[in-house]
Length: 178
Image: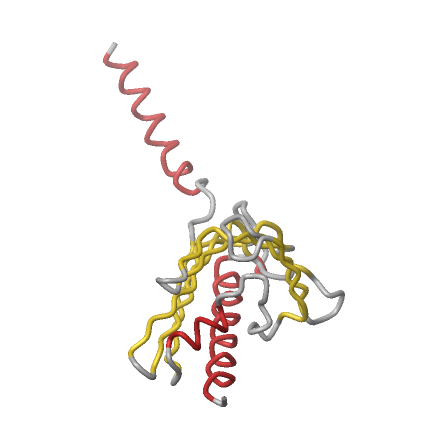
């Protein structure tokens, strides 16, 4: 009996490292924020219409249904070759807290190399200044092990971070110019 127990323990120890390598991708997180010289109500007014994503520079057109009700949807048509689209659903809307949450329901990973993406945008204010915080949790665009370079963790994080920093900088510029 002792030999059988030792054999089972040895097999388990031999298999355990391969299980650790086979768990798949980890959830990634990106958080970006920017201070804007404008009152929170003005900033929120620009961001609060879920069916209007024109404040995102990469977006050419937004078609939405459901307004700001949880479950509302929108299709973002992006600028660029082939006019790719991203489909999203509103998961949270808190006008008093100046917060909205959404998830991507459909996107080609060649357009944005992510999967299972959920995001929150929050505006906080202090008089004539505001802070916009945009954060997301997601998995890389390739769900299996050994992803190609354009769909790995680094590429996914870089794509989301690039989108957020560029968009927030343009939002700041447009709101402070008025």
